[in-house]
Length: 248
Image 1 (cartoon, rainbow, N blue to C red):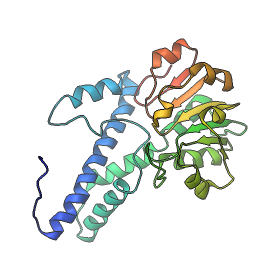
Image 2 (image 1 turned 180 degrees about the vertical axis):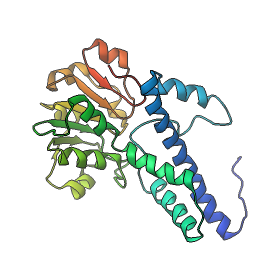
Image 3 (image 1 turned 135 degrees about the vertical axis):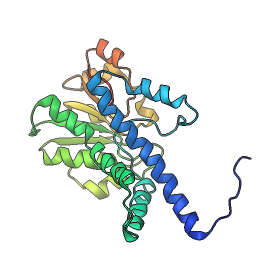
Image 4 (image 1 turned 90 degrees about the horizontal axis):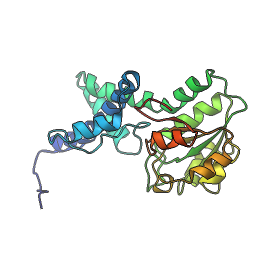
């Protein structure tokens, strides 16, 4: 089947698992670093992904720029391999930077919001958040980028209206009554100043943009997963911020 059973010693087996997830995490952080350069020089991170992904030495998987990785595996295994390295006095700078880049990337949408409004005081603003889990098709919120974004918004005085297809109950364990929980994605944007897309749920990929325009106070979208076409949103009158692309 192309998936052989490989026999090795216990230490090598454990390190193989850590190394695999750390390498995949590194690919994600690399693309998030590249997205910053793309925004400065006017390149498109989607084109970069297509280009380098066509090289079989690199492959197409885990090359999507976004709001950073979360969940139970990548963060845990990156921390585990770094802890092991410290115990044996080995300096793993590349993996250390992978983790550092990821923690910084979780604030990327918040940083774009601050840049848009020109102030770190967001009192009186209400933000709709689409997606709370660290990835679609799960209710897992461990190390989810949405947590970092929402905590930053609340600290800045903003209000949050959130929706996730399955992670709402877990979100309540984290945020309690500090945010509003919406019945669906369109209820979340009702009267909000802007929309932030954090998790790439299928339900969010093809929204009714006319309904969004009617319900948002301002046609303003912060897309943390590059789900939408810039030119289309621009033609509909939206101000659109994505990852690794010039804003409209």
